[in-house]
Image 1 (cartoon, rainbow, N blue to C red):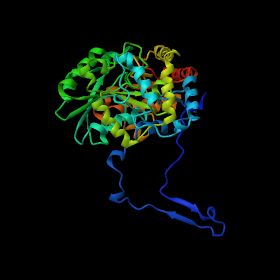
Image 2: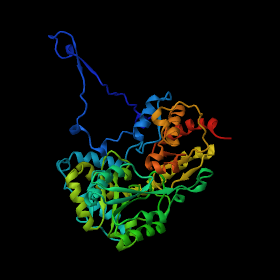
Image 3: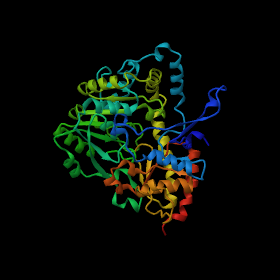
Image 4: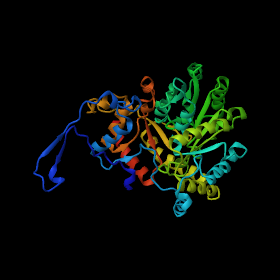
Length: 463
C-alpha cells in the first residue's frame, strides 16, 4: 500500500525541561547538565487570540488517534488529499517549466499571462463570454489564500459574513483576521437520513433563518457548491433565492467552487445566473482540486473588475505572487484538458470511486448521503453502538458523538474518518453528531482495504 495514504503519527513532544550534555558541544568541557526553564509568558509575548485557541482541532485529534491505534498502518479516508498523481500531461508541463528561466522567477502579481488566458478560455463556455484576463481574474496561492484576499479586501472590523454550516474550517480564521463577525446559518440533513440513503441534495437551508441572519452590517455571504463535506450541489432554484436576497441587501457573494469539475448532477455556477448577480459575485477556483495536485497551491478568483481589483491588491500584500512554474503547468493543463478528455474522465473516475466505496454502506445497511459532487461522502452511524464503557481520552469524551465515533473507528478498525461537527458551531453540533465524512479520492486498492476493515462494524450494529 502507498505509504503516503497512511497517517504518519506525531512523534515530537514538547518538554518543560531541556537537558543538554555539554560534551555534545565540545570535548574540552567537563560533563555537566544545563537546566533550561521558561519564565511565565509576559503580556507582550502572548499570542493573538485569533491563533491561541486552547481546544484541540480535529486534525490534531485524528492524528493522535492514529498514533495510538494498535491497527497499524491506518487507512486514511479522512483527509481530502489525492492518493495518486496528476495526469502525465500536467506533470510533463511542470517538469518542462522548471527548465525555463522565466518560469523560475517572479510572476506578475495577478498571475502569469498564459494562465490568465487559459482560465478565460476554459470558463468561457459557462459564462457565455470570455472573461477579461487583465481585469476579471487573479491568480492566488491556492483557493484558501484567494479567499483570505477577498476577506481582507472587503471586510472591516464589525462587518458580518454569513457562513453556512457545515463550513470549510479555514473560512473562520480567514474572516476573523480582518475583524469580521461570522453569522452562522445551519444546513439540515434530511429527517429520514438516519433510516435510509438519500441524495446529498436533500440537505437544506431554512430560508427564513437565512433572511433573519441578514442585518445592515452583512457585507458578504460564503457559498460552497459542490459542497464539502456534504456533497450537495445547490440547485438553480436555491441559488436564485440566495442571490435574490444578496441583490436586495447589496451583499457580496463569495462562491467557493473548487470542486467545479466534479459534479454528478446538473451544476449551476452562481455568477452565471444573471448579469446583476455576476456583478456581486467572486468565484473561487482551484488547480489542486482540478488536477489532483493539492500541494501545488495554485488557485484563482474571478469576478467583475470593481471587485477583483481590490482582491488583487490584498493578494499583492499577502504574498505578492504565486509559484511560477506551477502556474505555467496549470496553464498548459487547461489548454490540453479538453482534447485529452480529462474533465469527462475526472467525473467518470470519481463517480466510479464513489460507487465502489459506498458499496460497504449498502452491505452494512448504514445510510449515507449520496454525493452530487466533490469527493466526500457522509455516512450516518446512528446504527453503530459503541461499548458504553469505552475508554475515550478526556478531550474526546467531552466532544460530540461523531468525535467518539471517529476515535473508535481508528482504534478498533484502523480506518480514519473526519467528524463533521468540527465544521459546525457548538450550538449546532448535534445536527451531525451521528455522521462521519470519508474521502474517496484514493486508489482502488485503498478503497477495498477500507471496505474490508469497515466490515468489522457488523458486531457493533444495533439489531
